[in-house]
Image (cartoon, rainbow, N blue to C red; front, side, top):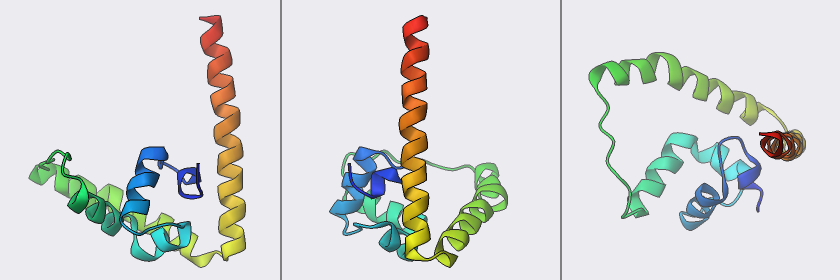
Length: 109
């Protein structure tokens, strides 16, 4: 897996989609923003399904989710490239250890 799949909430498939739309690094993703990147993916994804958000859902997104995404983007943008890479390394380390713990737990069930 590449650098992008080490980011939170980005797996191998989303990484492949990002690469397909010309986003190949965490810095590029931060620069364009999560929403714009998602919209680029949707433009090329002929198999994508349409999601219709109700008025109540839109309010929830605007009041709760968007501020959180904006804060996350702001924090990451304020870090140096070196700090972002350290962060990615720690996330990958956590992810690997967590998956190991889940597999061990599954074997006991």
